[in-house]
Length: 171
Image (cartoon, rainbow, N blue to C red):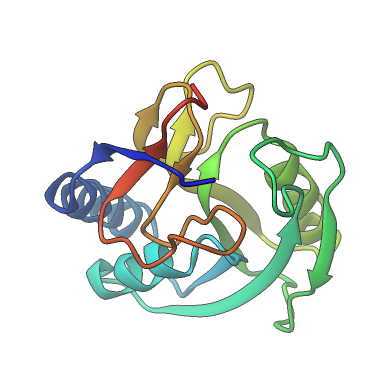
């Protein structure tokens, strides 16, 4: 079956959102910040975000998955790679590609809180309209439809798209 894609967000729209978020984060933090990217989807966003920050930071990753190879969440979040950095007393910003149901972010934030950080905040490039999860930093709001590109995949495909598109027929 051939998948058809429709444009959602252009490279320039994404770049503007990343710059705006980085400016907000840089204004809110003065001390070293620990950025924790949720793999795999956040890696492109996180890399661009890092290049725009004007504050000291470190990076770590956690891998959490709930989609597998489908277009709907399984409803269960599995942590397959844990954070390696000591979180005690750290300001932590969890970075995710898209806040949809909020389930993945909730599981990850609870895992991080168990490490006794000074603070935990959340950042997402995209937030689904009507999502129960509202990150502290949001790039753009997206309506219905399964999106791909800019690190976000469908069955491990389409991560390398420079823009964000949606799969026709999923919205």
